[in-house]
Length: 298
Ligand code: GDP
Image 1 (cartoon, rainbow, N blue to C red):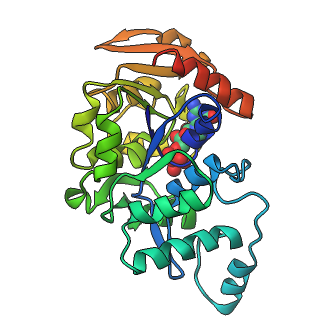
Image 2: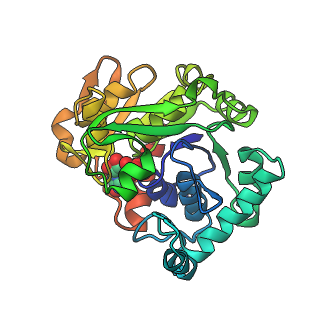
């Protein structure tokens, strides 16, 4: 089984899934950014920390119990570090960046990190090339992190695009895990900025078509559970609803899992079966229950 993941909703689901089955994860890297000299991979880190059991489950980023002394000192020194990076989290970024500077690929560096953190599952960056999600707004064209973290998601979104995507190609590890699986799970991640970059990498989408693909809707009712997914879907011309999510994935989706509040949508739409359950994951039990529900389709 292969899971496609962004950074908040899907790690919540992985927390339950890891108790039940084996899987590999292909992770979005288009939100990666170099900060204060180090490469931060927000989605890869959230997946690694979740699988290592050290994620901060309040925020779903960073390491639980982390301190921020280096970040505070950098601010005091006048460094414009607009993301709050924990001290232990930064150690991971430093080690990753050292490996990259030595010439390792992001895939190789991530493998070193996951082994050091005791993560058994394969965690694979979607590609080794740099791809950058850019948000076109009424206040200019900016990196996703500038839009979401620095500007708190307030500018009006006109468009979203992935700089460098035309050069990105599926790594041999990504191709291997996709070719040898028959079940793909798309977790509740931002369809535009987390999943669209993954399926836009050359070689990936074609491999999804003949698999059983199940997605969990990150949109509950007519809003995202958290984050800017609604704003981005609207800007891209999709309806902000679970069926809008199905439409983003229409080329390969078989089953869409929607929340109980959207139970009226249960049915069949152009070859996509819609099923409903409670998809809100507040506790580890919620995550496990949703994972069990999904595994019935494997
Ligand atoms: P973000 O939009 O940048 O936060 O990107 P992510 O890929 O990390 O997406 C998180 C997505 O997960 C958001 O669109 C949320 O709506 C969704 N999400 C977060 N928690 C839950 C949850 O407990 N259940 C469901 N169904 N969706 C969730």
